[in-house]
Amino acid sequence: QQQVKQSPQSLIVQKGGISIINCAYENTAFDYFPWYQQFPGKGPALLIAIRPDVSEKKEGRFTISFNKSAKQFSLHIMDSQPGDSATYFCAAILGGSGNTGKLIFGQGTTLQVKP
Amino acid sequence: DSGVTQTPKHLITATGQRVTLRCSPRSGDLSVYWYQQSLDQGLQFLIQYYNGEERAKGNILERFSAQQFPDLHSELNLSSLELGDSALYFCASSPLHIPFGDGREAFFGQGTRLTVV
Image (cartoon, rainbow over all chains, first blue to last red; front, side, top):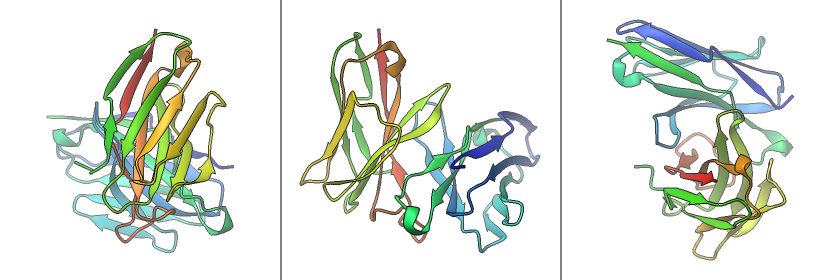
């Protein structure tokens, strides 16, 4: 019940296209959902995050859409660029009394943007 | 640069040995988290320290231990190493014990790649 399921495992998109990565969870006690971007040989870097009381959050070309009733959220990368090629992780943090601050990560999506 | 420093960057050691991984959090951050990243298990939370005290424990083996010192740096000790312990080990830090919005998110170091041969 503390899992976050992420899909697809890998994604190839043409430059200028839209990349969409989906995540789903079961535990309604999660109350913070960040996305991390990881380049080879680097640590994960926070990209954008959302709380479940917000349905959408946009930062530049990156948008999180959140569907609380379906317990799903997704990352959209508009106008995808070759420099966006990386592994993307969705994550979740428990709120309330179960909040320890630990990040529960999805399995990751390797994105390749072709020029 | 996230401001979180991990040393060493690479470590190669033999089975049965013991190693220590070091993490210096961002200036002012009180919380340190350790994560293990392997190909088959993804990113797994190991343990968290807040201002010197253990705050949360995840899937950390009994052969592994950690501590946070008064200057807030942290060390992860891995002993009786096995081939399966080969992985990337990341440290992350945040100002509070709860990574949250409003600039209190957890920031990750570049990791230590451990290879057990």
